[in-house]
Image 1 (cartoon, each protein chain N blue to C red):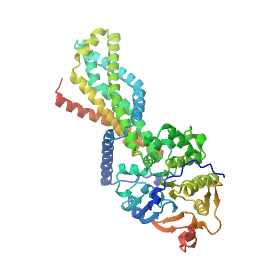
Image 2 (spheres, rainbow over the protein chains, first blue to last red):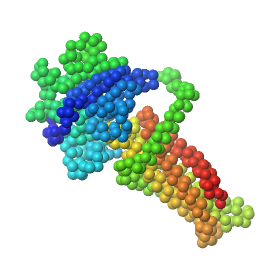
Image 3 (cartoon, helix red, strand yellow):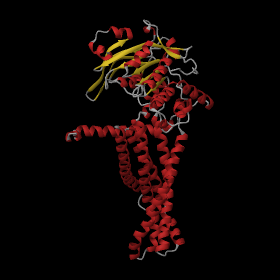
Image 4 (cartoon, helix red, strand yellow):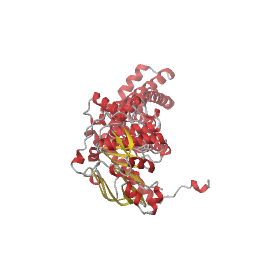
Length: 282
Length: 267
């Protein structure tokens, strides 16, 4: 598939230059009633890296994203996002931090009573300081990034599942956030549409250097991301030459029984001797 | 499928009490936030006007109908009793005081609760179960500011005016019955209806819709925002919102009436 043109400006990666981590989890524990979902998990997401999170259903993958965004609070442990400890922040302070983070929800979570334009522009309108012309320009840029410019006046109910997911990505990137959180962005989609979404995520990673956490069930998506990079001149995702896949900022995190059992790159994943992981990736 | 699959898990009384206290706490928190948001920026005036149109203008037909027929039936029912004592001319006074102090606010409140409390619960409930509320928070917008406060303000303001319209239509309904069916003089009816009202009646009748509007909107929003369990949960929230709002209107009505009688005395 050929990728769209790159209309967006280079995003601010000031935080990276300041040498801060994008996200850090320190001994985070969370239980629902008596069931421990996350048990003292720790990991870090360096700036510019995309980390794919795996685990069986109910293993707390989506919960990690909600914790990082401050939508949920852990029972214990600390979570740092862009240097701020979200576990200690008030809801009011979190709203400011969330403006630097984009999130793509599992079922897109588009506002169904608003058009695609209004959905994508939501954050810009809420900021209150962006002119209407500027909003229109940035909405069109974001939609052109996901190749959905023509849907600008449509409602989410008029779009297919894949298109809704792409609009959700456009909504997440319209303010050029420093961090992107993807919750099963390819879940329930056909292989062609999944590849389109994966290409958009790779483009965001390689062109805009956005730090990302991506929850997914589809190992093949993460493998594609670890073995491909976005070629700006060709304007499409192409495979890495053999043996250099560790050069793309891509990591894997695997959860089991509430604990992190693997955190590393594709090479380390291939070398692991853990029976469960070998079976998982087989 | 085995019959046991449909068994409802039993909850211990302590657990049940804990759940109710937690619900009450969450409701109180939402009420507090919706009021505090009035003093925080942004204020979402456009959303308030949009909601006022939906709640106020949208409820106008049912308020006109219920107000008119309530006044008419009040006149009709009291006519036989009053005529037995030769006091049929008091019918205007009875309709006037009854509508303005009690029936106008309560009937309008119940109608708006049925229409709008359910609407708020189902709309916000659908948004909750489809993660739109979480998406709004993730986009850096406070849902209580954007969704709850405009609905509360719009309901309080519009119920105030809807009640006045309902009171007036009730008096018109009473006038129709008294002049067309009972043969009373229309001018005498209006003079009597006007003169029988004292400022205390009007105050009572205008304080109640403000409180009822607050109850209707906060209950609707609370059940919407706390919806769990998909489409079935949305249906449950909608029903609960209407039932709780309606019952609370009657409960609040009793206590407000008692309070105002204590403060202002009997007529």
